[in-house]
Each structure stands twice: as structure tokens, then as C-alpha cells.
Image (cartoon, rainbow over all chains, first blue to last red; front, side, top):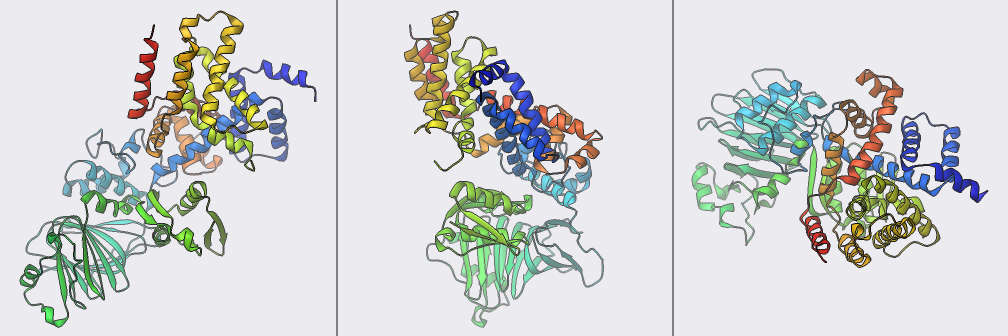
Length: 390
Length: 190
């Protein structure tokens, strides 16, 4: 190789020319039309000068970086490009909506956004709901909707989210792999959660209690917002607004020793329930905003958390999972709920790694990549399962 | 040392491009020359790292940029010394700049999103569909009603615009504002 010749050629490149040529190579490669011949041309071009190589690496890095925008595309159908600035209203950014609600949302979602807007106070939450509505329409999850006297059945597949407006003005958001049965009668709004998790925004109606039945447990509300997640016989209830009552027919209510007084007033609970006897092996608690209740065979355990924290528990409505310092094992269990392709961990030291952050629920591959980059965790896929090791 | 040089260079050097460009813009009187200074700085760092990776890549990057500017001043004698300031001030600045905290992931995402929003409309849509949605180029062309070659041109243009937008966007984090304040106090020295 003639060093002088190389110097002469590279000296003729301005940064602008290098940028143009590097971009042309990268765009060609990105297009998918990339042969060995193209690769050889690129390598030859790069070998001519370090200036070319660093110029190429610089654009390549930026183009890789642009992939991170995936974080802002939660729930949008491929090919749906959000309007400039819309990303400000995703859960990644705290800024208040710049436009009045509804104005920024795109046309197809108008009707559903409006439905939600009617029931929700103005502000950030509303905007998120509007985005969530976009999400649901865009994904086009199939739900069953047939009116019959015994009620309606709705379900979502793994990875699906769906919003179901009810006749009384309430709204149910179904999370991944969820099945509910809805029966509205003059006496009661009865929802049976057969599987999965749902978030309920209950229109106020003092005369018609809103009852969510999950196995032998009942969650009763008048006008409020809460979620119920069912895992076999266990349920987990998160309340963000108003007050709900949880009844468990199978066990006594249990309160952790240092739980704040708001979590449970057992006297009040007995009084309010009337007919239900605690001696008969029943438990019940009242939950207020920020309450997270787990009801299983052992009884009902209530934790009181800041509202912001429980809201993070519910970011699945926007297509995200939000983790705060939880073990990788728990994080993976969450991802597995949303994806057919499962992730498994054999190594306990890997399982114990602590994780924080927001991730798109449907994109476990991105999560695995983050683990690779951040924790040097190795991923191997075989037979529909990705196994993580050090 | 097992890591390929290119990957190392992206992570340890190119990641500081924003800070480097701001440093050059502040110190160099002619902003049109900054892209060339940036490129020459990268060339020197890359070639040095090919022989032996520096212990502290970010400090090495800024020291290289400073030496490069000093070389230009010595060689050309056309840049007034007080336009650049004395070399001691440059030293102080390097310390301040390299002490900058890395922007949080959220700030980086914000800058990226702002940079994307700054692209021409068609260009932005093409980038989104290719990068975010992973749609094949053929499908992007069909959706936008343009030829595949035009999609490729948009992608080319986007890469260049994004690279330069990211390099020059000013992050708004408090610690960076602090470093700017530090710099103006240095400049006001006699």
C-alpha cells in the first residue's frame, strides 16, 4: 500500500464529501439491497483513510441511535407515524399537553378519545388515556361484542390491550391474556374476571354497585378507578381513585403490622358489609387511592403507596411496563405475561439483578438487548424460549 | 482489548459528540471550520486508540481537540490568540466539560425526538417507518407514494441531518448550564 497515495486521496475529502459518501453506503445497506460486492466497495472505501472510517462510524452510530425512538411508538401500528411533538405526551416525558385534549389526537381515534374525555378530568392523565385509545384502535384487538341477556364476553390474546366502553359510561381496559364477562342489570353492574387483568373506570351510580368478581373474591365500587389482576385464586387490586371494597370469601383479612391506618378498618368493614360474617371465614377490606391489595388463600394484604407509584403499576394501559428496583426474575415474569415467546433464567445470580425503567411490553427483544448492553447478560434462543445467562 | 475498535469508538468517543462540538464552538472563532476540527479530532483519537486505548477516553478526546486547535493556531498564525483564549483557560475548560454528567436516558431520548421532529415531513415519516416500525423499504415507498430510491435518499439525508442536529442541540440539564456559567467566568478573566 502506498502511504502517500492514501494521504493524497484522503486529503481531497472534505468532511462534507465523507458524510455524503458514508450516508450513501449506509442507506444502501439499510435498504436491504446489499451484496458482497457492495460490502467490498465499502471496505475498500473505508480503508482509504481514517477520516472516512470515523465519518462512517459517526453516521452509523446516529442511525443506530434512532432505533431508540421505538420507545415512543408504544402501541402504534406499524406505518402510523405520530405527529411531531406527540412524543411529549408519552409516559417518558412529564410535560403537560401543549394542546387541549383531543386536538392532538389523530382522526381515527376521535370517537373513543371523546368517550374517555367525557369521564376523565383534564390534564396529563386524560392525554394518556387519549393516547391509549389510539393504541387500542390501532392495534385492532378483536373482542367479542354480542348483546344477550346473560351478558357479554370480552377477551384479549397474549400481548393484546383493549378498551371496552360500557353502556353506563364506565370503561374497562383489558390487559394481556384477559377474559371478562359483563352483565349490567338494574340492581348491579356485574363483571366477572375469568382471567388476566383489567383496569376499571367506574361511572358514578350509587344505586348500582359495580362488582368485579374474581373467583370467590369480589371487588365492589360505586364510582372509582382501580385495576384487578387475577392469577388463579389470587387477586391483586390497585386503586387510583375513590374507594373500593374487597371481599374474600375464603379467608380472614390480614393486615401487615406497620400498615397505615387507612388500609383497613375492620370494624367499619364488618359494619359496611352487613350480612357477611367474619366468623364464616370471610375477609374484607376498604381500599383508598394508593392501596394495593393482594388477596389469596392466606387473606388480604394491603400496602399503601404514593399515587404516582401505583400509577406506574398501570402503565400497561399505554403499552409499557414500568419497573422500580425489582428483581430481574420478577421483571421477566411480567414480560412473559405479554409475549408468546418466553424468557427464562436458570442462574440465580442473574435472577437477583435489580432492574428499573420503562419498557414496551410487547418488545421483550429490546429488553433482552438492554440487559446485554447494560449487564453483559447473554441471551440464547431455542424452541420459543430465550434463556439468559452471564 | 478484545472489543473491536469501532464499537469502542462509538461508545467511548462518539457518545461525547455533543459536548465536543459545544467545546469547539465555544473555543474556535470560525464555526464553519468546526466540522473539520471535529473530524480531525476523531481521526487522531481513532488512530491513537488503534495503537493503545486511552485510560480516560473522554479526557483524551478533549485534550486531543485542544492540541489540534493549538496546532492550527501555531501553524496558521491567522487566528488571534485572544479569540481562543490562553491555553490555561482551555485546560480548565476541559476539566469542566469532561466532568459533565452524561445526559439521562430520558434527556437523550428527548433530544433525539426533537431532532427527528426537525426533519422535513416526508423524511421524518420515512425514518420513522424504517427505524421504528422496521417496515421494508418497499412498503415505506408504497405508503409514502414515492420510489424506493427516494426513500433511500430520505434516509441518507436524515442520517446527516440527525447527526448534525444531535451534535449541536444544547441539552437543558442543570449541570450543563452550570458548566456554561463556569466558562463565562473564565472568559471574563483578564
